[in-house]
Each structure stands twice: as C-alpha cells, then as structure tokens.
Length: 96
Image (cartoon, rainbow, N blue to C red; front, side, top):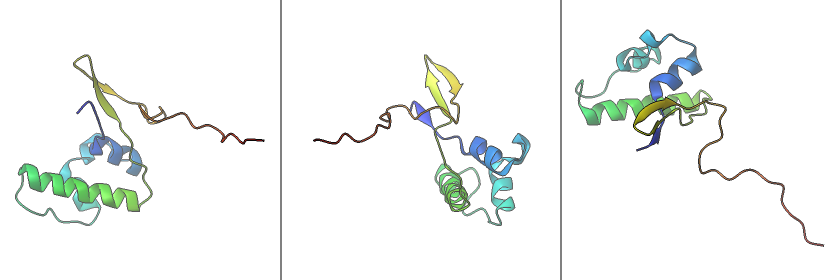
C-alpha cells in the first residue's frame, strides 16, 4: 500500500479530539461501542476499525486518503488535495 486512510487522524480531525483520545479502545468507547474480539488480534482490531469508519461515515465524515509513502518516507496528505488518479472534473461537451 502506498496510500491509505489513517483512521486515528480522521477521527481526531472529524470529532475535534486530541491525539491521545484516538486509541482504538477510547474511540470505540466515545462512540458507545464495545471492543469485539480479542485485544491486539489483527483481524479483530481491523473489524473494530471498520466499525469506527462506518460510524464516522454515518455521522457525515468524508473519509479520504491522509497518509502515503513517497521515496520510503511517511507523508501526510492534505485533506484539501485532490485524490491521486482521480480525473479533473470537466464540463460535459455538447455536439451541435
């Protein structure tokens, strides 16, 4: 993966909470959810992160790529930057 959504960053920005409030168990707790599964299980952690993402979408969050790798370096992607690979919006052409 060269581009991804860091759900902790998205959660913190969307709900306006500090970084120390974006641990998985805290995010679930604040959203009124319990942790499902075994702690530190990759599969269970992924399922719980997906549940958080679904809730954020339901609350109106627009999840966008916010981190990427470039030349071996972790980089933050501006939330206002266009998505890489997305075509530039253009007005439709009409034939006479």
